[in-house]
Length: 296
Ligand SMILES: Nc1ncnc2c1ncn2[C@@H]1O[C@H](COP(=O)(O)OP(=O)(O)OP(=O)(O)O)[C@@H](O)[C@H]1O
Ligand SMILES: O=P(O)(O)OC[C@H]1O[C@H](OP(=O)(O)OP(=O)(O)O)[C@H](O)[C@@H]1O
Ligand SMILES: [Mg+2]
Image 1 (cartoon, helix red, strand yellow):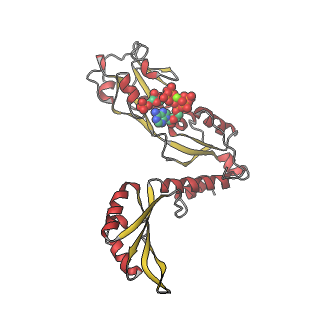
Image 2 (cartoon, helix red, strand yellow; image 1 turned 90 degrees about the vertical axis):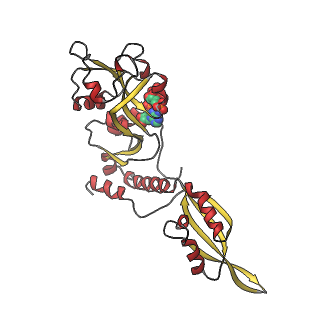
């Protein structure tokens, strides 16, 4: 473990929120969907990082593609269907009863009944047990396989993994604030580095400035703050001389090949490419934001 005094437990998403609320966990990594549903109105929880860039999905309303829903393509269409009455409300199955109900109420749905379910909700409409579902969608494969469709305006929330904490722990438990700070810094630095690579190459030149001019003339070689150019020393006739310059530049992974082509076009050779693990920038605004939410 690279962070001392940190113990890691894998728990079910709902239990993470529950244990944060009860004070049994100090920090949690959990989807925003779960926080929205299960941390209802609990102001002890605070989101330290809201976009860890994994577990991307959306909570969405879906209905069967055919039958009475054949021409239903928007939330408005669904709302105006004559089928839903007090005696026969639209039956929605979901594991997200709180945010699901709140959403439909805000959109003006009156005749709705909710049914709770944990898994394979996509099968409920075909089994005749529900009219619509509110569930997580990522690739959309599960919906397609079950002959269901999303409708315009039916996205309830977008979710991805977040780092959350209990304010009580941050304020009162020794070391929790410091560890949270370190984790936040490492996560941000790692996210900043993801998708970026370091390209190193050698280039013949008369001076660092002259090499820099050539490098900066290329759009894909500008780097984070500009290229780093340093002399490569060799011995020539028994004397130390500089014939080559090494250039170091950080570029987006997706411009890898373009960068190589541009480097070659200005005389670069011996190109090395390495992955970056962390890029530590200035103190992240998320830290300031957290301190202010804690009243510090
Ligand atoms: N298809 C998906 N693609 C990406 N992220 C998803 C997907 N489905 C769920 N998630 C995210 O992952 C979290 C965990 O999903 P899920 O509830 O299916 O977990 P699980 O580990 O299977 O737990 P459980 O055993 O309680 O079902 C969700 O809260 C959501 O944030
Ligand atoms: O749009 P897709 O990429 O098909 O993903 C969506 C599916 O993934 C989740 O289920 P999961 O596989 O976690 O099973 P579960 O519902 O039984 O937990 C979610 O509940 C959907 O069923
Ligand atoms: Mg699951």
